[in-house]
Length: 307
Image 1 (cartoon, rainbow, N blue to C red):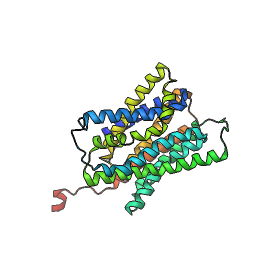
Image 2: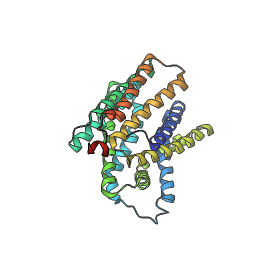
Image 3: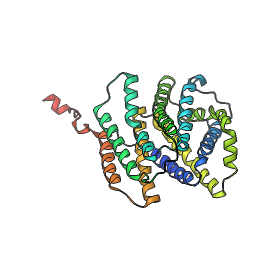
Image 4: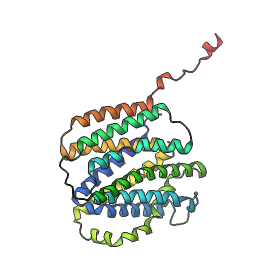
C-alpha cells in the first residue's frame, strides 16, 4: 500500500491541531483540559446534529460496545494532559510517546497471535528511533527540576500506561469495525459524546480557566477545535481502511512532521539530531510501505504461460 488522500488529510489536520495546541500551551499551560473538553463538546454537537439527526438515527453499533473504547480513549487523553503538571522532563516525555508505533505492533501481534511482517517491524522501529532522536535534539537543555522524584515516577508511569491504553483503544476500534461494519462518523460521535459527563469531575477547573482567557486565546482555541475535528474525523476514516498498527505508524509520522514545523517556527534552527532523525524517518517510512515491493512475483502473461 502507499500514501492515500485520507493519510494526507490526517497529516494536515493533526499537524495543524498540534501546532495550535503548542501555541496555546506556551500561553496558557493550564488550559489543556478546557481545550480537550471543548473539542469533545464541539464534535459531540456536530455528531448529534449531522450523524444522529437530533436523535432520530439509532446507532449501528450497540452503545454498550462503546464502553471499553470510550474508557480507554478518555483516560488516554486526560491522563496525558496531567503529565504536564507533574514536571516530567520534556525529553523523556517525547521519547516515551515516540515509541507508540512499536508498542502498537507488539500488542497487536500478541493479541492477534501472529508474527509481524518484516517490513512493518523494521519500519516501526526506525521511525520511532528517528522521532526520538529529533525530539531529543529539540528538547530544552536547561530544564528546571521543579518537581519531586515521586511526581516524576508518577508521570513516567502515566506516560507508559497511556502508551498502551492508546494501543488497546485502536484494537477495540478495529474489532468493532470488523464485527458491526465500518461507521466512522457514528464512532466519532459516540466516542466523544459518551465521555462528556466525566468532565463534571473537573468542572471547577474548567470554569476557573475559561474566566481567565483573553480574546486572542479564545480565537486560537476555536481554530484548534476546528482543526482537531478535521484531524479526528480523518483518523476515524483512515481506521476503516487500515489496521490499527498502520494508523499508529501514520500518527507517529505526524508527530515527527509537527516536531519539524515546531523547530522551524518557534526556534528557527535545526540540529544534527533533526537531520539524522529525518533521514531515519524517511527510510523507516519507505521500508514500512514499500519494502520488498520490487520482489513481489510479477503476473504471468498468457503468452509466457502458453510457452
